[in-house]
Image (tube, rainbow, N blue to C red):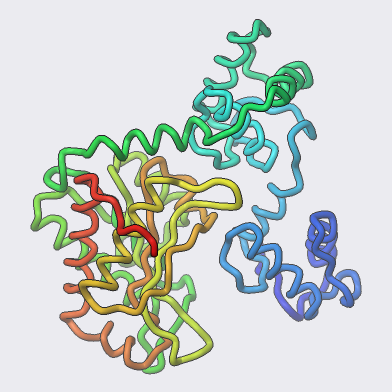
Length: 361
């Protein structure tokens, strides 16, 4: 699809405006079919609400969120099929199953095999036909049990917390997926002297692979330096590679050239987040801040394909601002990628050993 942004006109803009309006984000005072400042403001508000990158443009990720947000539980019959069903109605189903103790795994809005299994277990438990179909009868049974007043964390978050209490064997031999968040030809930011986001991210990712390998881990890259697989393809590669965790490396960009420091993302949205992903992000950012003296830009939940479609703890790290002249100069140096790699490898080891991040003040 084309990126729909300010200045665009046509039926696709009209469609975006209608979807935004139905979700409570009006594009006033823009005319229907005209992407002006009102539509951009509505898109930004929607992106902020959905924890996707806020840029005021409707690219593939934002469009997917607009489509998924249009479904509420009961709008359609849900069951396992291919291509898989996605939407907020699926998230609602997963949340109810998890809350009742039927493990639908991550509440990612994707009706996969785990959700199908949890749904069938629920149907068997309450005496319904076990067909894996979330139709009116099954949804009514879920609603009735929900009305009993069951509250608290869902099964998926309880499971993640329990897994974190049992440290793994450590860094040696651990499969670690390493990702360069942007590839050649995918756009991205460009530093003041011309360093591209793709080049800088790949240099950092390669340094991390080398450091992890030297420490006895088994790291693998999710993209070759000259390839451009999409986020979904990279997530599937991490899953197929049975990675214990995933670290994606990116560079921050800001209109203010003075903006500096490091930040990190983990999988999360309003009302749900990955417990283990958050810990990995917190430990990684702490290492960048304390070991390298990076400015602390914070840890944030984000609902991005690479984070939501992977089955292991995952974090996206931004060790520097490419748009800051001083930080771009660091990225051009040979030592900075190695120091970042050492700090992140330390954080990965701490995560695998079960260390908790420092408590917030």
